[in-house]
Length: 445
Image 1: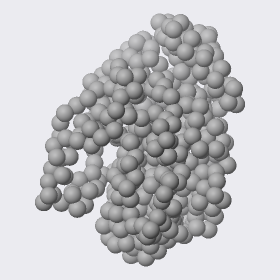
Image 2: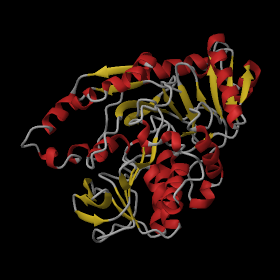
Image 3: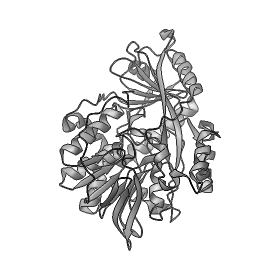
Image 4: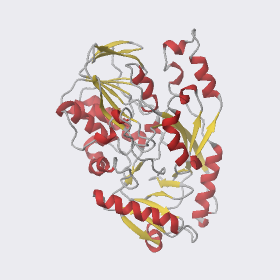
């Protein structure tokens, strides 16, 4: 991972803006991309974050940019979004380590292969050029893979990968160059309405008058929604990633196998993780909507681990009447470093070496963790909400939002300027929770 602590030189604004056409809460890839596309069209944008640009999920994920394996409600967005990725370095005039090496999902046995074959048929019907591949095809894509890895897989050649924090910072820089005002360490403490219309955002440094708010706050979005009475069913889970020391060339593809997922960076190092695995730090907030999340937990129980620990104690402390965090809810979650699961790192390393016996040994250079926002049906929440004019959600990406960042940012700009996005996002609306119209729960991929 490119160090999040590495100095990101960006000119600080001298004072908080008094007003804006749009205030975006959250300077991850979605918020920064939305700021870029809005300001490109002439909108006066203010982008705020409780911490630093890209400090949360947008700087900590694997960097996969994939169309395959998507829920049918997401895939049309990614088909359009992939076109943006193809030319993003040129558009942002930045090195984002973009590699179009495809994405490969490996089938470990015939049962797994049958699942992938069904997915390929579904995704082809939607318009994706995805292929079923056999053993020889996989071995061409990964020449040094061993002999006991599986039976085949699915592969999309137009997929790729990039360095997450570089992309997020490039969008932030481009947005600022377009006139966006960016304020780090400027948490939103309240969202103001006049009647049923958004009228402002109160930050820890003052109030900004606006008629439009985009909530792109990731794992903290449900707290933002509650400020105006919106009950967003969203949880956060903790995922762990590790980086190896540089290794000989393995592949240019992003690879998802049964026990480990990985991509190889330009310097030869790998980002590795246990695909789909996550830790859930229990908090009091999790008691809310537990029935809504139950089908998801049942479907993916093998990949989830629940923990009682420090986050629960912090949550309790924040609810005490005299607690500072009761008045300033984001004060204790600024630039935090979630604890990586060292056991999962060890498991991923062992699984990687089984795939590549010729490596002999793989040294782990570093590991880290990050919180992921998750919805009950594992698809995002995009667009305006019933009853509150001017409030837009762009959240709930459930562990696969990095690749969607550019197209979601552009879609939010289209929604605000044109009244609708080019890609139909109706199935991803917030109101699906009110209408009990959730997407069918699928396995994590």
